[in-house]
Image (tube, rainbow, N blue to C red; front, side, top):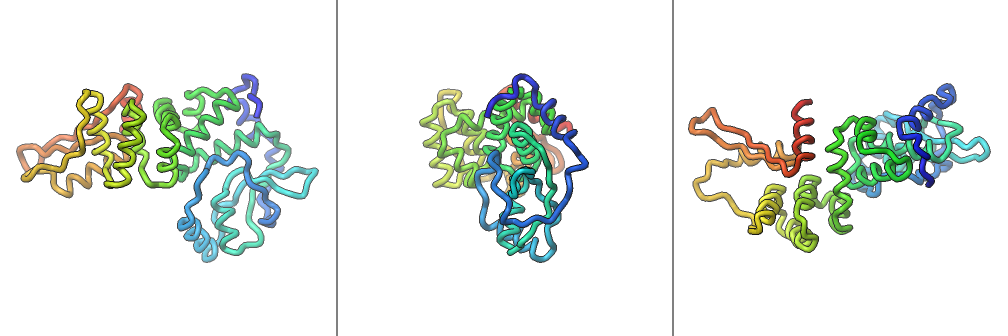
Length: 289
């Protein structure tokens, strides 16, 4: 795929959006005539969730059409966005599917539209999202700031997601398969020694360690005193309810959070950790929403 010679992603997507809107029709088309998307950012498709979506389609039909491209010189369609819906529709036994049919797109337009539509969906895992960001940068010379503006995230959030590509392939696969969370991955990447990362990744898998455990190790590593995960001391005021709240906040903010009860039953403090200025900016943007 050649680069877009300095036109930038905004110019490219504007061109796509202005492309013969009257030709973008919702039609029923045979599923057998739809070819896979060459630029699909998603790499993993969970069979269980596909089966659930297929059952929903059987009962209620397809609620949102897929997007395809039609080559006027051929009898086939190429998928732009909606591969999960297409796969589930095939599982549901549908012969035809509702699709928004776009025409006369070149490869650059198809790539740009496919990536943007897929990134803006919330169900891409973090590694697939990072790979899609990288495709936008490599194919169109898009900057992190341009991508952030287009997908509605802060530049720091885009930067932090791209950093996940620095992880070993085994760890990236763990994120894609759902074996570890994005929070685990962000904590792992703060460990500069790749061998220690792999070692601790194996511990996460074997011992079911939490994001907090990994962050504690990473903080100790930076202090030249790596320490293993610790269990709460007997008599600690960190109740199961507090631990559950901390876990929920960490999932939302993507960083270590401590809920510290105060001397009284109705006071205390919440401590939000950050590990870089980019991380601080990312957390701040979340809190401002």
